[in-house]
Amino acid sequence: MVKELLITVFYFSGAFAAPFDSNGVNIIQPCTWYKPIQQATGVKVRIHKSYRRRHFAPELQRLEDWHKLSYRTFTYMRRQPAKGVRLGILPPLVDMSGIRYIAGLAEGGRCNPHGGIAVANVQETRSNGLSAVRASQVVITHELTHAAFGVKHNDSVPNIMHSQAGMLAYTQDLGFLDSTKAQMESCLGRNGFYKRKAK
Image (tube, rainbow, N blue to C red; front, side, top):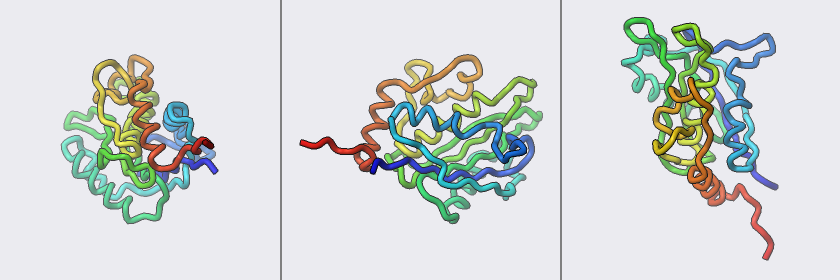
């Protein structure tokens, strides 16, 4: 049986959080951020479970408190039952002037498809009124790739693993580089995600 890459998602409420529709589907639809990983590796990605949680630290939604919020979110998610990669989806960060920002952070830097952990701040609309959906999708994909595969940034050309991928995604479509795909496949191979060919 071919293994699936599982993701447990924690959606946190808060000011300007990406909304859910009447069917309980988030505006940043999961298939849009996990499909690039699925296409790049040939391994099925599946949401094991998703939880909706009240934001436990709204006072930390300020831009200057980003790292403190990230690590508190990591600590919270580690205590929750989950399978596969843990992903926290948070509302956008807000600076002193009220401008909103999307961002992300993944822990580790090693191949860990069974237990990586990441957070992403996302939003439906930017402070200027333009859509932030596509950029938010890219931020989530970017952080999941860090968390599950240990892939590092590659700033040689615009791509999903560029350190400024969230900003680049506002103006162009981004994909995975072949070198990144090779790292992802290598990680999954070492963890038994691919069937071995009969000799």
